[in-house]
Image (cartoon, rainbow over all chains, first blue to last red; front, side, top):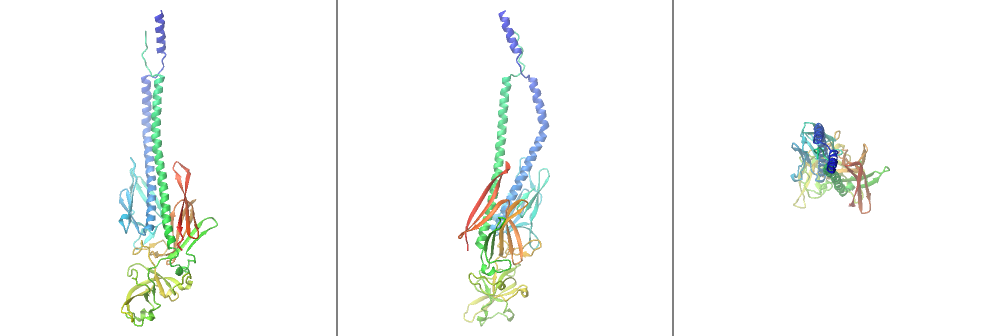
Length: 170
Length: 320
């Protein structure tokens, strides 16, 4: 009699134990996985977009400094610096008197973002701090010009380089 | 005893799982935060370095301006557009500081026809060259001739006395159209003297008779190269004669430091921005020094409203 009452106590204790079943956990996980799968493209696109914008912004900041550097050097070194496209993703300002003073710039790239220059801005120079376009018989002072960047998804990004302030906006 | 088969996780087990999950999420969040902070710090550092580079470049340019200011002052002081003060700092009513420098750099040679009458036995000088032949006051080669570079010169009647600028009417800038060397033999010596037969461009429009010519130096970046032309202006070959004005320029709510370069040979003004987005530019003069100060902001990538102001001052020895 005593033994039976003790067993009955244990049985009640065990039967009253609450918890999630394996099936319930699996269902929750499956639903979570489906939601994650549904959200994945949006998240991926958002990440790619952020990375792309961040890369373009870095390029804008880098190009800004690149042009400011060339402007200052053209005054300090008393030399003409010609702008050349040296690769798909790189530009160079070449000191016409001393090649060791050339400066170069390479576009940044992310894991999924690759930028390229889509045009060849070879006719521009910094002369005495003035940003000039080379004409047949003279250099014409320019207020601004555009650089075109090509992204991996073939989007063309226009960077406006203003001579007056040497800033790059897009 | 009938024991029902265990069919769920206990609260303790779930709590442990949740704690581990929370720790994992915290760890991922921390990694993201650290990475993001590093990125922001990197941007801030780049912005700071860029601003500092710009300021350093400006001070280099400004130092050169102070060094040049006053060169050939007594000759150019009365040219149109120039004044009696080769280096002037003014503070306008709106608080904007203007620094004006003016100078001309000439070859280490002054050509004169003043003393040619003293040489009684000159040869190789034709009659028509009397008014066009200049002797070198200092032995030197004349700058590049026969090239496509226009040679500008300061032309004046008398050599100025120290501290006394030439009268306005007795100085002008002229363009030399052609130059050819002439060897002159002197009667009292077997040595030869170099002379130049120069033809001045538009000589009929140049008022007065000018005895001395000082050929102007050219900016090395442009010497022998193509000239610079601004839309609607004449071509500037880089002859170094100018009046420069450093000041702030406020446009669209942003303040920049600019230099305005007036070039009398082509009567044109060129403007160049030296630094973008500054707070203010100041310059003061003491007896011995000039002090230039620039204030600019370093933006905080995390909060665009939170900017850190950087003030940089440099002290320059008064060159005059």
